[in-house]
Image (tube, rainbow, N blue to C red; front, side, top):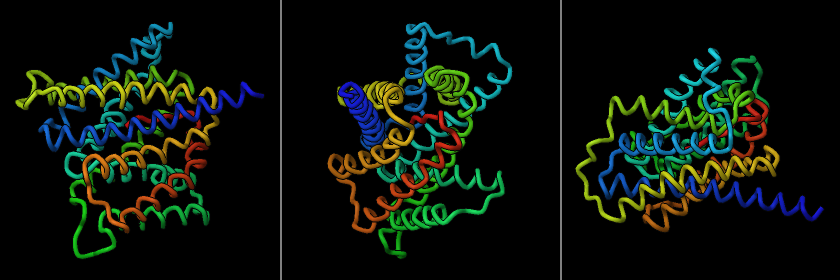
Length: 309
């Protein structure tokens, strides 16, 4: 019994730490975009190529057959779609929302993805929404309204373009989750995510090549922030989350959905002094409650899915 409790606590610590690192990486990215003049396109390419390659190397060291996924035609088509549309879509829209607004709002808007997943599932299966789903949708709409207006219809507290990118990020995350579900039943998540990053980042390289380096001030702080986003905010965060699944149920792992936006909000307020009004805080709480309400439904649609932002 003692060992089981110890493993459960270990799993909880892993998923909470991983989620917090994901949230903090958004805040670090905001500093890079708004103070260091790093572009979202450049950071997306660097993050995806380095993280994806390292994940595949890690899988190879674990004696996983990382190239076997390329022997199945159906998996190849799914993987290409997942990499170019799902993975790249999530990464770019999320960073674009941060670059034009702030990490707190971008992360919260992205985590409306469960709403889109549930709505898609109901439309596909022609089911009427339950009272729980209707409550979640109302909370999501109310939370979004309060988040971007702080309760005042006179002006937006967040630039409209950032809101649009944030909503698109949520849609992309919903697609990412659904698109990866079938592959994750057959292939390990590290292999799927690793190749998805390499595919998406490689495609992005043709449009926004990472070299030569952008004409920005490459000081120590800039390099440390990039290192944090790539290593701690991506690699360690993802590996911690994957490891936590060994010790936790899917429901317990859904803690990820609430800790990540919470850490992004707190970090934005404390470190970047992003103004966050009372009604915006209420809106953030509404969105996090929405995620928790819909997490069990999302898991039933894709019990093996995992996400990375």
